[in-house]
Amino acid sequence: MSETETETATETETETATATRVTTTATTGAVQRLAERWIRDGMAAGDGRGGTGTGTGTSFVCSPAGLWLALAAVAAGARGTTADELRALLGTADREAAPAVTAVARELARTGALGVATRVWSRAPVLPAYREVLPDVRLDAMDPAAVDAWVREATGGLIERLPLEITDATLLALVNVLALKARWEKPFEARRTRNLLFTDAAGKIGPVPTMIKDVPRADAWTVGGAHVVELRCATEPGGGPGARVRLVLGEPGAGAGRVLRVGWAPRAEGVPLDTDRVTIGLPRLALRTRVPVTGQLASLGIRLALTDAADFSGLSPERLAISDVVQEAVLKVAEDGVEATAVTVVAMRPGAAPGPQRVRHIAFDRPFGVVVLAGTEDTPLFTAWQAQAPAGPNA
Image (tube, rainbow, N blue to C red):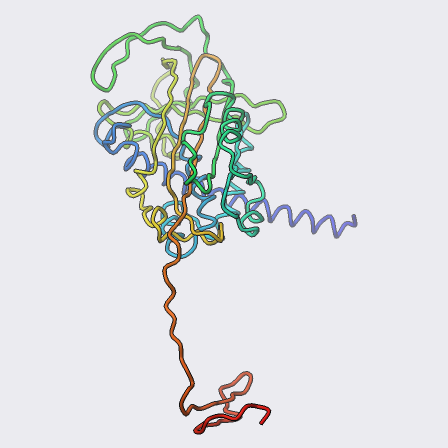
């Protein structure tokens, strides 16, 4: 390769990398907005899965990134008003969604010990153009047993099967998996773990195994009355930077809708702690939640995509509509590290068959005119009026 060719290739790679960073940065904001809205209006909106904006509720774990990737991959095949609705929630839809999905999935996969994968199983034909714009999304014929086996393998056995039953009415299932199994950069010492009292959302107090460790002062701060502590995961050999886990403790009585968003607030908004030493007591935890997102979509602004009027003509020549969106997520935190996985499935059913076509027949069975125009202008080259019964061109 010549010096000029090398420079050109380098410039192209730099431009591609810059474009990817711009895409992923913009999408990070979109995922954050989805997370805040989903937790506030869905997970924590009095549906029994989380606290309201001013209270506390039951425990849950969910994956905003997993939900965004699954919905955005489907949105890549949406058109018209259906795409507009999805774009309002996801920040992208229609033809521009596919490159965003690919860029974000690849960027996320650079996180050490994190696996990212999306696959489609379908009974309906999938347009070649849809396959081409999502090169990392594999397409297979519908096979429920194969779906379960893939989910089990991709999640390291944490989730045994798809969190949704595939029926004969399921024409297509798009499944996204995020799976993290990482060691702490500085593990907790098991000898310091002991039972300490924990007060739950209902005010009940009881002992729970609690891990104790010192953390650098720079890794703890406050935002709007909430305390934030950042724990880093180890960098895997030959892998990218490890994940960062932010623990967020809100004011007494504050619920998920108010507290969790602090976890992705910019570090620059944090106020350092005025102290000489920081220690934390973190309960060991294991959470598993199956979220029927379908019933929450309306509160997130997604309505048309679930109706017979849905337009996914960029995905399949068959009429499709979303029938179900379900996510199952697992989180385990222990002395040596963190393990988390989420499976998000978007299932699609047959949409309404096209309605009867309205046909208007215009019969030129009485006197009519003919105008022949120039190729590029409306200049009448010839005009004619047929008043009598026409004679054929061979007359």
